[in-house]
Length: 102
Picture 1 (cartoon, helix red, strand yellow):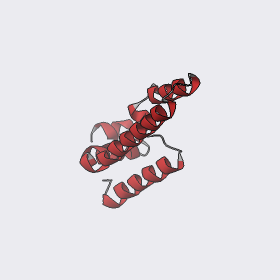
Picture 2: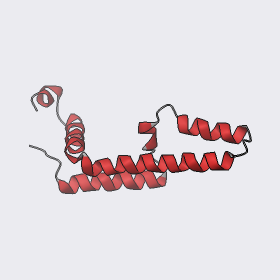
Picture 3: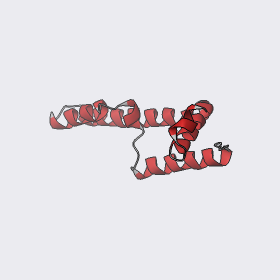
Picture 4: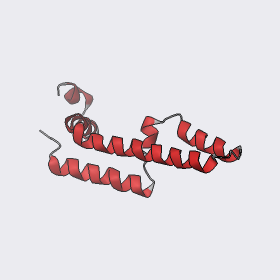
């Protein structure tokens, strides 16, 4: 049967990295689905806080750290991600009755 091999996995990882860099994918939203980081940044801009630029810089650094942590999960959680990827690819190709048996 179909299996996600190293080539497919690495292609997927490269695709995610490329889309993140282009701005088409925002991995930080996986972590921050309520957009709290953006709200903090906007509040600091709108209220003209004395340390607004420091707050904006800190938010940017925090976003970058979240993205790096999520990207490192590609290595530490490889088996889980590979399995999820496999299931999602198969879900587009196989009827439900065949997926349940896997």
